[in-house]
Length: 348
Image 1 (cartoon, rainbow, N blue to C red):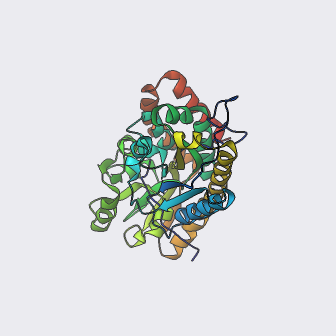
Image 2 (image 1 turned 60 degrees about the horizontal axis):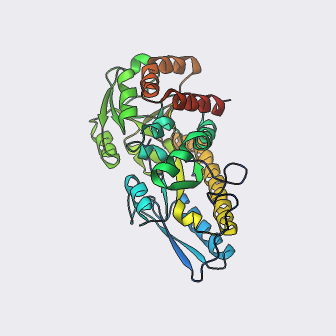
Image 3 (image 1 turned 90 degrees about the vertical axis):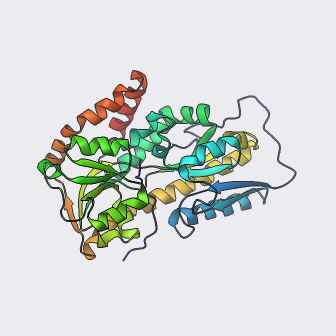
């Protein structure tokens, strides 16, 4: 069986890079670059995933590279497993300066700004590659400015952890009629609205309450689950059927406090951006690989994988149009158009 690691699902409801050629340093043009510190600067990086996961390992490597390239003057210390804060607390902790860096899916911050929910609109992505492209595009065109103005943070890495699918206990959903009457574990208002539009009944549960509900049969399926997570968490004792239809996208971002970033000399800023880009490239390759291999692994374990035909998926897209329309109606028309344009470009 191929290498696996834990993935935080949400659930599961990300920001683009501020790299050379994509965005610019926040140090204003013409201003003097800050000088190197006289003592080493320790930077705390909080992530929710355990230290044995791919992301935690990649963050440790990024920290080691930064320390080496800055001659030990910038020391990133990785706190894995949510020991400093959970993802929903991250922005407030970073804004206060209690934490200098952190990881979170952008959709986890939707309570702070509804626009961050865009990555979880139902059926908008053709595959994980288009999900990844969207995350980068929407960050560059919209989210980066919101993050800087509202929370004083910016991303140095952004990727997709996978596409969320229907993960059922007793049967797959193969037609639009199959959704009717199903009790579905949903993770957030967007997935709940999607379930309702498909004539199913949403049951909103916290992440760790969903699996017991699947085991006990109190829900028929979850729709905010990444198949890789089913494999990683060994949920295949309860999940026996997965319908692959690219329901919801996902994101993951590594953020840095802007005050900290702006206090760095330009050459140090570039090192952080470079190492963030390396981490992004590595993690996107890892999760894309899992996206293509995990279904084979699950089939070997007895999970039925049903790939929904394009013509049937089109019916599901039509049935959930009201969910997308309602989301866009809550936004400024200019912002809504930016999101629509990014979706279209990502799927090209």
